[in-house]
Length: 381
Image 1 (spheres, rainbow, N blue to C red):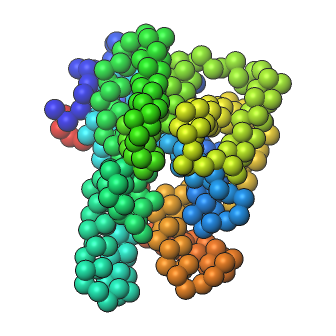
Image 2 (spheres, rainbow, N blue to C red):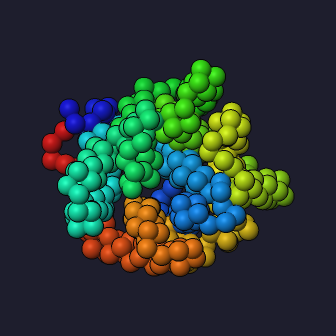
């Protein structure tokens, strides 16, 4: 079987609404949300400023964690809606959508990276080392090679987060299938328990002398940020957060506080700090969740208007490619140009490669991805 399903899935997918499939009457996501694109744009810009050693952005690595919360939220909402609409979750279709979204741009970046390294480094041993690093990234193992103090990959070190996300994509649909039929309250409690476990686990590992690399890169220590988005999705999809849109003053106050908290963490957090792993990550997850909730529930609110700026929406739309390219570009540019020049040249080159990837690789691949959207029949079960 290529999908986990009820017997009603195929009928629903073909447009015949079968008895027993629960059409959801609560809030829904349809299409992409520009405000969430813009939030991704802010997140990737933070990460760029952090890796470029820009003064005042020592904690901007939290942009990755904002990405994690967004990913957990969107993936969970879409899977819940698919189950409600079609009576099941098409696992093969889900994994194929992820494949067409992620792999083409990654292949391009790695191919260019390996080719450039063979030209740039005359030492065959150095060339081989970078080729091996590219394989670690390609097979989504980069977070574990860093977690266990192999200190690789180096120039592709930013790809640890791609590995964490891919491991989440592989596991989460299977876990969700195990709890999706639970009543809303029990499903939320189940996800909340899963959220707490990585938090407790990394605190325990730190108490046992685990390295910073272990707790920063390990999927088992970072899954709570993704699961925070999953918790938010479970509550939102069940209609438990509809009050947010109709409660103008408290929502505005909480959203403003959340945005200010993210700004504060982005300027002051330190990745080699016990406080980050003990309480700051849960606070960052809560703040990111509040911002997400505000922009989707209050499209006329101050945050939603800010996240409607075209430059942020545009950057967010191509944020995956921007993230892929930014760190290798910064690395090689900084070897040849000092200070602020390196930042501006890196930004320009990253944007060039990002747009090339988007228009030549990613957009055509997204057309193929649509063939595996929920409800599109594959011809075989």
